[in-house]
Length: 229
Image (cartoon, rainbow, N blue to C red; front, side, top):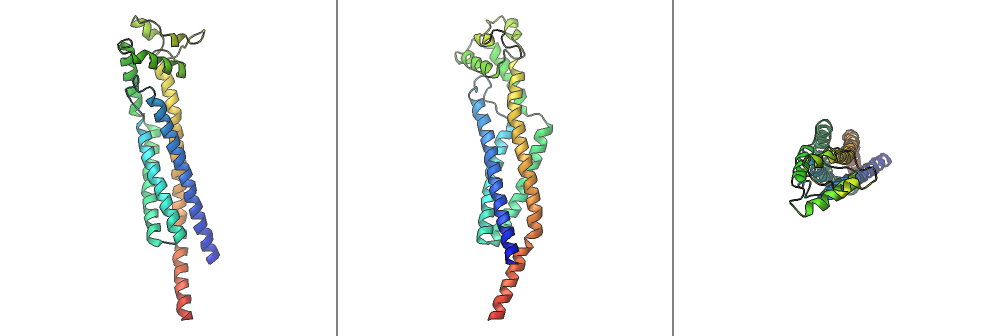
């Protein structure tokens, strides 16, 4: 009985360590993407995908819940363990719901960015910092204009040198390139959320089923103590 109990307790602690690692990955990917977008905050009007903020908050809460679980199992504190289980059930449901909604809907970020880039091109030479920042964005994403280099021709604006960075120039528009770039990060975050959510759901199913072992052992210990006395 004791060996079985120790096995499950160590397994539960290991699972919570894995949850912490996954949440660190979610924090890392979300934070890096936000940091990359902030570099072009002027031309993008400071827009960032909503899922990043939600993912960061959930990852922090999830990691704290995992630490609480480790403490509860390690010290065999029943109340803390129950709090860990209840909190993790709520977080897992929210995490899977957010990941599902984000996977089947379009983030408002893309609409805001389209308007921001369109406004930026219209006022391309009105602000000193816009041309240089837009040049950096076009070089990084290998794009030109909003939909194509023709956006500058239509507005009778001089074609930025960043559009001619290569001999052939960049043909695709920045909204397409930016969407692909950000979408990769979003899909990574969604994938991580789904992965950790599913693992946590399996973990919760097992823990609710097997946690009775701890109660059985506690009863067994009390009975043994009573018999000895």
